[in-house]
Length: 468
Image (cartoon, rainbow, N blue to C red):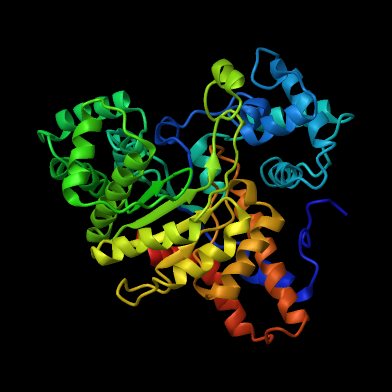
C-alpha cells in the first residue's frame, strides 16, 4: 500500500467517512499566507523541483542544518541537483517530523509520485518531478486552481500600492480571489529612526501633516480605507509578546511625538505607545467589519552571525515565553471593548503552554453583535504547532473551553504554491480526532451534526466569518 493512501493519518471508520465524504473535496479558503500577488499575476513556472521546494523554505532549512548539511547545500551556491540530494538525505531521517508527511503529500498530489523519498532514490524522484514540471503547467495560477483554492489573503505592508491585487481583480481569466491583508509591522517598529522615516512616507502618501497621535490615526485610517477598497477584510499583527500598558491620551501624544522625531523610548514607554496604537488600529478595523489577526510568541533571528550572513526569515526563530500573558491579553481586549473598538479577532498562540490561557480569554469577549458565531477565535496551530500534536492540542483546548463547531479552520501561512496539502493534512487530523470521539462514545454518531461540523470547520465558517 502507498504511504499516502485513503487512510493516511486516519485510524477509525467514522473519521475516514467524514474525510472522504465531507472534508476532502471542499474548496480552500486560505485566509493567511505569504504568497506574493506579483508572482500570481506574472504566473511564471518554476524551473525545477529544487526551486519549488527549497527556495525560501526555512522549515526545510532548519531540518537540513540539524542533519549536518553544509550551508552551501541549503542557501548557498551548490547546484540544484546537490541541494535536492541533501534534502532527500534529510527526509530519510525525518520520521516523526511533519516535513516527512508534507513532502510525501506534495509528491503524491502534484507529481503522482508515491515512492518514499530517500538517499537511494533521490535522483529518480528528482528527474521524475522535473519531467512533470516541464511537461505540465506548474505556474502559480494552475497550481492554485488544481488545489481547489477559492480565496487567498496575502500579507502586505501599510504603504503597499496593491498594484498586483488590482491587476488580478481586473483579470477575467482568473476566478480565484487574491485579497490583501493589512500587516502594519512598520507601525510598531522599535527603531525610532526607521519609525520616523515611516511616518514621513505615510504623511506624503496620505497628504496628512502628521504632528500628533490623532493625525497619525487619521493617516493610518486613509491607508486602511485604501486596503478596504482593494478587497482587504483582515489585518495581521506579529508581536513577540502581548504587553498591554495603559496610558493617558496626553502622554500617548507626547510619546508619539518624541518617537516620530527619532527619539529612543524606554521599554515601558514603547509598551504604552504600542498599546495605544493597537487600540486605535482595532477601532479602524471594527468600523469596517474587518477581522484582526494576532500571531504572537515568536522570537526571531536569534543567531546573529547567521542573520548577518543570510538576513531575516532564514530559519533561526524560536518559541517565546512571557510572564503575565493572561493579564495583558485580557487587558488588551478589554481596552478595545471599552473603547468600542474590539473587532472580530483571531489569536494565534505559538507557545502551546498557553493554549488554555488563549481559549479561556476569547470566551470572555464573545458577543452576538458581530453577526457571526464565535467572533473571538482561537487560531489554528501556528508555525511550530502545525504538526499533528500541535493541531490536536489546539483543537482540544478550543473544544474544552469553547465551541469547536464554530472554528474557522486551517491556513497555510506559507510562501509555497504547493503547500495547500497542509489543508488536507489538517482535514485528515480533524476528521480522525472527531471520529475517535465517536468511537470512544464521547459524542453520538449523528451523521447530520458531524457532517455540518466538518463542513463548517473546513470551509463554511471562514466563508461566513470573513464575508469575502
